[in-house]
Amino acid sequence: MNKSGWILGTFGAIAIAAAAALPANAASGPKAKIIALEHKCIQAQTAEQSMACVDKNDVTFYDFMPPLKYAGKEAVKKDLANFFDNAKNVKGEFMELDVVTDGKLGVANSIQHFTWTGKDGKPMAGNFRVTDCLHKVGGKWKIFHSHISVPVDPATGKAVMDAKM
Image 1 (cartoon, rainbow, N blue to C red):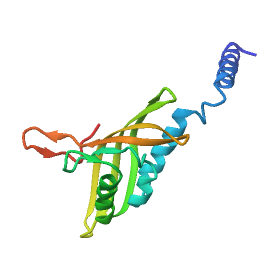
Image 2 (tube, rainbow, N blue to C red; image 1 turned 60 degrees about the vertical axis):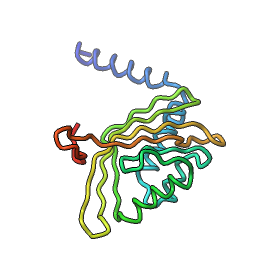
Image 3 (cartoon, rainbow, N blue to C red; image 1 turned 135 degrees about the horizontal axis):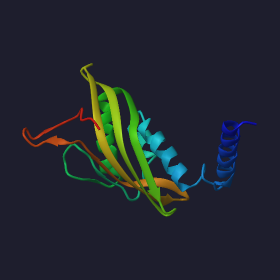
Image 4 (cartoon, helix red, strand yellow; image 1 turned 90 degrees about the vertical axis):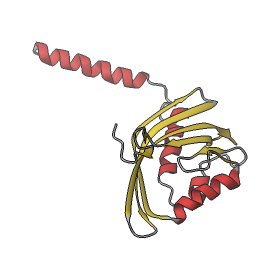
């Protein structure tokens, strides 16, 4: 075996050993479960599907649309229904998603890109900053606080829906 073959083989063996040393629950641990929930939420097509992601007994949204705060199940559901009643063909994707958790509480910070068709048939798009705070309810991760925002151009005071990273 030549020197480069030996080096590649050694690095390959180290990589396999490192992967084997990962905790068995890494793929199904708290962080993975929060990531899975975030992906479920971004794919929602109705207020009811979105509400499945939240703690219905303790939820607050700071949406980018007024008012400043949507507190409680009914207010949050009304906010979500308002969006889904006025948007069709909603498609969301993560431009960035970071999750931290200690197993009891979790925070998911993301940049999300959405496209949809407005009620008038006009195509719409936007990039949003989202921070979700999660805890367990009945053994399942649920969002109890979500903060959704878009950057604002200080010169005009208007939202910048197509802000880039």
